[in-house]
Length: 427
Length: 175
Image (cartoon, rainbow over all chains, first blue to last red; front, side):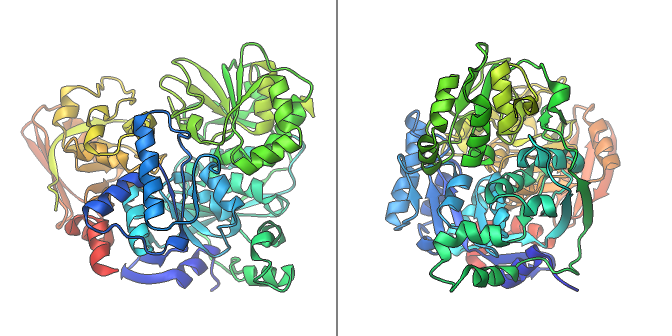
């Protein structure tokens, strides 16, 4: 019997199986941000165990509220900053260099196929786009990860989602994942790894694959996983070129992490996406989805483009193509948060930032703030936001606010019309 | 080991998420105690008042499917812990929330829908108490002159975490 990618990673990283079905794994990367890490640091200090298992395997960023907005957030940032200095954590990203964690860390080349990754952030599943096992955890798991370099997981079962056909114009990775969550339900993949396969994934860029895997958690999934291929190699090449004689060699090495043809899946879904339409959420759960066409005309107050789901350069490009030469509707405010400084600068160089600003968008520094109602774009009571983020819970972006999740293209079309709009008319 | 049991708070809805348990704007707190007043602040349920007597006296929460979905924030179990709620009984849990509970030495117990229905009915009696015996994997509910017992499953690992007082102590001894 063959193995899935997750099973291969579990087998190769196994430290202990204290009880049947519970696997303690060695960690390759432990990621930290300033919201969930400071309490882990404080607890380690209180226990007299202010240590890290390996500073080179710890990556840290201040990204949720940055620059700090008040004394409390300044204290959180300081705790992370002081800790990173104290333990010589070189990959620490502070104001000026910091970006949204799940966009920044892959951009820095920190993830490889076959890696085990944890972070105190539910959207850590993003990194599965590289063929890694990446899972969001709480502060206690993070604390043990920091101290011991291990984390415990239940034996993974894998759901295979075959994305067949090819995406029509105006339909993107965000529409695909919203559709898949709509099919699986918000707990359809709890304690499962979702393996994204098929020609639609193979044709996707790494950015799109990250968008896909980012929202695996919204179906309850522990991680999303894509098979490493030449697209993965090309993305990572600047970071690995000294380790392989040629890209083909890297590809051959990465291929050992791909699921075997005779691997066993708990469930297999086949979706033909050739007729998929742009998708938008309408309720307070990410599985409540309709087509943008059906929801067209729904009024919004704010349009937000950014986050670990959709703040990458390709997202900005798609939206800019729709916004170019146009103004956003007078009843909406548009906010763009490029996810990293590099994305910001590349967008500047390409003239994308100019297009957004000409259209009437406010451009913020890279941060997660608006997505969870912490900073930089919080909604007022009763307001509605068209957003490229990943969660539409009641009050998510501000108490009493409502969020419609959608792709960057749909959000750009919505900004122009001031109501939810189908982006395909702007193609 | 923490003790489990006492008056119950029934939250009769599926998919109660971490934003509802503790809104993100309070994640700027850096001690667990500071979270205490904000428990379930944004949860909208008919008849439920987050500041009400039931929330104050509860030691066990009973709820439906996919409890604790959403964010990885351990602030969700912590806000229960500092309000002396150390166990949640539900039809099912989101993975991260469930593990956070056990990692803190608390209990996240799954029961089938029919048994949750039964527990929900006990909410009508003001004297209802749930007792949870983790070692024997048994729940006893008493109220309105009645008593019923249910067996539950818990993974041996999660049970060991509860007995060890949480994952940090367990891992520190072992790895």
